[in-house]
Amino acid sequence: MNLKKIIKPTRNKIFLLVGLFIITCIFLIGIGKNNLSAQSSPVVTDSALVKKHLIALTQTPQFRNHKNIGQLNAVADYIHQTFAIYGDSTNFQEYKVDGKVYKNVITSFGTENTKRIIMGAHYDVCGDQQGADDNATGVTALLELARMLKGQKLKYRVDLVAYTLEEPPYFRTENMGSYIHAKYLKDNKIDVYGMASVEMIGYFRDEKGSQTFPVGILSWIYGDQGNFITLVKKFSGAGPFVRNFIGNFKDSGQIKTETFSAPKFVAGIDFSDHLNYWNFDIPALMITDTSFFRNKNYHEPTDTLETLDIKRMTKVIDAIFLSIIHLK
View 1 (cartoon, rainbow, N blue to C red):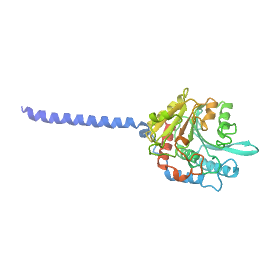
View 2 (cartoon, helix red, strand yellow):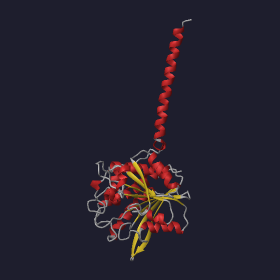
View 3 (cartoon, rainbow, N blue to C red):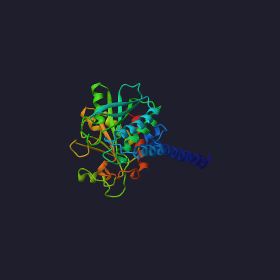
View 4 (cartoon, helix red, strand yellow):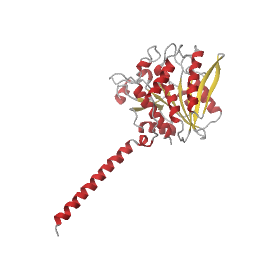
């Protein structure tokens, strides 16, 4: 018997099997690292539609502030028309302030489900400016999410809500559109799993020193480059929705993401519509590029379309979408 002839093929088979095992392990590890992306729908954010919506929201005859109610309501009509193409149901939530009628715009998906989540963004601006980042980016995210959510099998009802009157002089008053909406949910004992406010998601910078913080020492933790999106939550008692959403968002691997939690007295922690849901004990978080801590065009005429990073903005919308459809 020639042992060499027997051993050599056997050894080759062993090497082949070991090699296949290693390749299989690497493949499986790769799948594990991108779990949400692998399981997700092929639906992705359309950058051309993002630009279309941003132009429609910012290039208006008048600025979309509380003084120009005709323009503000024309923007509300644009949002309603877009929502109505995709949503199971779409409506205005109207209310009066100083004798004038203002409108939230709401569209719903998965209406067969009882428990719901709220994704919200305000469409008004502060003063006479385009408000590209603040907050045409957030509203554009809602408009794209409406398209992406159509036909998806959802575990929860999803309400996309575009708010009016978030900006001064109505900020922190009962005239905020988000206050009206949150109060409606509470008064009617509607079962809400949680809420996310999409507040400025289009401004990114890679230069050192482009990111500041309410407390300077935080730059040691997060760095000083404005190249990430931030998920802002309560310091304690955030609840399962917030934890689940943040976990999904990070697992999606779409964009560099940081989580920030702090007491409400820290500047900026509640500077958006989520504050009204907190006030009604509804779990909520904010998705943001950190606003004026990064974007110095905040509440200035320089907050224009040209300053936005649309490529990274689309990745934020993709991450939001994946977070919603994979909620537990």
